[in-house]
Image 1: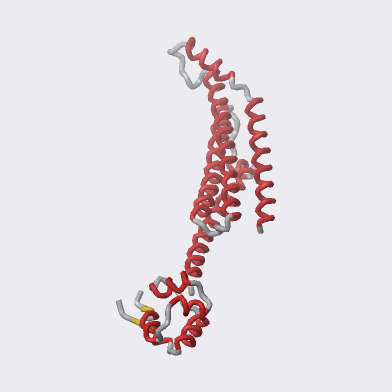
Image 2 (image 1 turned 90 degrees about the vertical axis):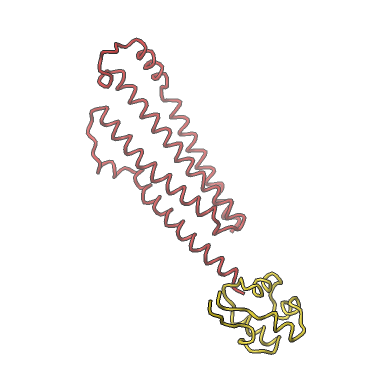
Length: 174
Length: 68
């Protein structure tokens, strides 16, 4: 069991590090200087012009939403890091612990909120880019599978809760 | 819990210490303490059988039902 946990820990670390490196690389390629350009424009812009229709504001919104997508990707990676905590608990022999139950719930929450937020941000991106946003097409995207996965973690949390009760009962059976 | 464990009474009657009984029936002193304090959620038939054999008594001598 311990060997399996060690292998799983290594795999999780590998996945986490590669996800972080991909995110950092994407952020490096993303031109954050656009925000500075927007700030400069904001200083010199004509206050009487409608804000939301100006080209710079739309561009800035586009970049802000992309930055939001980075944030949510980071949040998802943070969610993955809870796997390490769960594996640590398992390694210590605490299978049905309160900590594991809360980690499963947290992972479930992160997965569900990530998917909802990314859907909303993609909708906003489509609105800004004046392209069509097809909700059902978006649902077909790979990342939406995280919703059932998140729900599966909620179910796991409930199973572990019941497991904890059973374990306690078993410990008090003489 | 309406089930009372009268193990202490039986141990006094048989002039036996709980540690001795724990050794005879093969449970830890910690579990014996759980059993005596009434914190146990369940008792296995095998444990009950071992206790009855060691103390030469009936299950009813150890367990008692008292309405809350």
